[in-house]
Amino acid sequence: MSLLGPDLAYAGAMLLLAATLLLFARGIFARLARYDVDGQLVVADNPAVGVSLFGFLGGVIIAVAGILATDEHDGLKRTLGWDVFETLAFGVLAILLLRLAGVINDRLILHNCENKKELVEDRNVGVGALLCGSYLASGLVLAGAFSGRLPLIAKGTSKWASLGVEAGVAVGAFLAAQLVLVLYGQLYQRISKHHPLVAIENDYEVNGVRYGGNTAAGIAMGGNLAAVGVILWGACRGDIYDWGHFALRFALITGVGLLLLVLWRALVIKVFFRKLDLNREIYVDRNSNAALLEAAALIGFAVALALVLGNLADIAGLGAPITR
Image 1: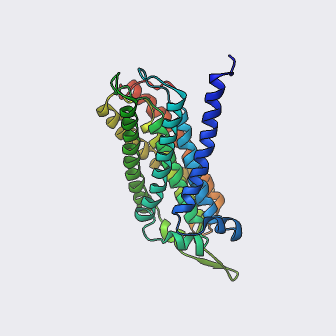
Image 2: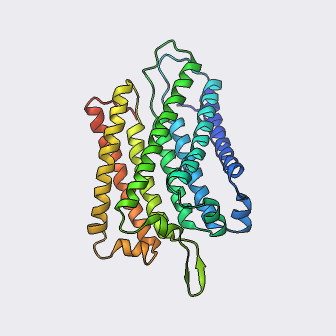
Image 3: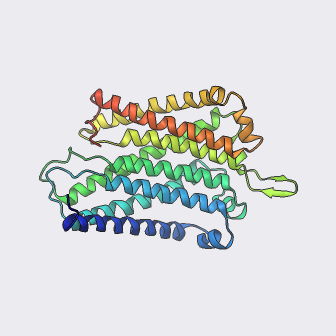
């Protein structure tokens, strides 16, 4: 099929819009930060700020991908101008919600840390990695919320009313997911043998050189949050035909998924890394390689959980079949 004419114009407009949203997200991050982001990235060569910004932009990319992959709603007349406006509106909403996620995590997950001090003064990559994981998780939630159609919107409903309902679904899913992330963050600290936030925050010295916090501990906790985000993506994605079924589907996939993820993490620590003490490697030796392996094992398992549990929920009638 030829991509000339309207198809080429549509593709070009969406590519340009996606690039514009990414640049806007970069500007919003810098504007709302309480420090000079460009100075930290270019002049100070601060890796902690870079890791945090990477997570924010990665979350934006994931959310925008979910928006672009959304199927058209039956019964609504589509035009290039409206699609561009709708994508722009949802993209800006996703960016603002992701920035809100940073504030929520600062207050409720990293409540004992002062982010500005840890990122700028201490150059704490562990805090940056934890924020990175939370941003990626929130981006996954938004991608899931935007990825399905809403057949519950009656035919004949205006495009503006439809836009409002879709935005409301995204905000509702985001808030529910943030609650889950905060609760998991508390659970993670309680089931850990060490004190993750203390390890992430506390500075240490090696051969007279001062380092800001435990990078490995931050990577491990950020990886856990990203894995939870994958499960929440599975709980949010798909078409919503009925609010009751959607709520039940979200609760079951999230509950069962988190339970199995916690059990898998215990198995990973005891069996997958049986030749080494994973907790010692992360919290005593500050081994970032061990933390990265834990994060990879959890995220990989979470992807399988999200897909399998989502399919089982659809078979059980908790939502419509997923067409993508």
